[in-house]
Length: 158
Image 1 (cartoon, one colour):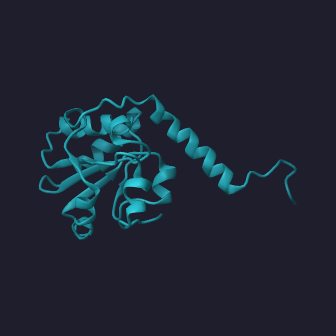
Image 2 (image 1 turned 60 degrees about the vertical axis):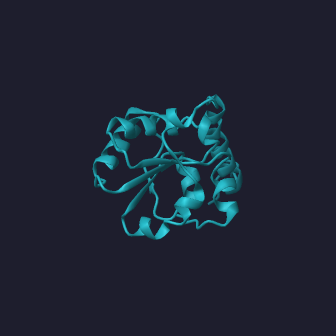
């Protein structure tokens, strides 16, 4: 039997969820510098290392909204989730602790420009606190779709 409540089309639901997720970016401060968010890595440099990601030489950690990760992400990226809560920060710390010291680490979100992203700063700060010198932040000056997908770099969907 069909419910009498109106059904929200999936596309409208996803669009609404993304709007909520991206609203946090508007609160960001776009004055961040590389010194405040960590060393930046160009998308082309990471795209050239996709085989290293698959081989375990590079660990890519996604620290943004789950809805965006599902729509497409860097191949082999691990979805840590947003680190705007104690649970999120704990999940990131646990993930980082499991990564061998010699493994390069790349953090990214991609919901908005990296310099104003509210997810990158706490994730990068946690990474620096652990003293991981071989860590970078993926430089997405606009967002993941514009600076990665639209440039033809490989995308994995889940």
